[in-house]
Image (cartoon, rainbow, N blue to C red; front, side, top):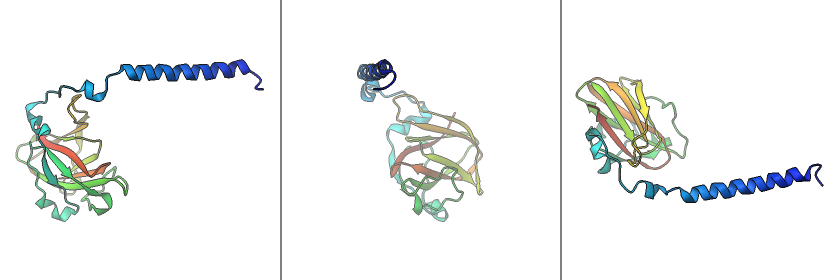
Length: 180
């Protein structure tokens, strides 16, 4: 018999009460579907988020010119297994052999703040002239929008390579847009 049997009984009883309390709280909380019955309003620069078009990423940075994204148009980006992607710069978080990534290109026509919105927590870099553009802000999309991550960059006119890394699925919803 343990030296303090009453403490053991109290510990077991407290654990049981905590589990029951947590179960009751979970049951009282609305499900994600209930909580998001009405989609969030999005700013006009992100309006296409709900109507993504299919788009295929490339795996070789030398062939990225053929994967030209249209800024302002959301895409469902088909990705490749990470070992099949040759990034122009090694991503800070490249992911492992079971993750997915890919490359695309976009052109900036006006200087300003440009946002990359993602439907998952994948790593994203914006690369020009063999250098990653520093991000100037990070955030989450509005609740009930499907936007999990947003990264802002201050960009000047020119062509940029977008590198997506460490995604857990073989596709991702993505939008590159200029902020007003």
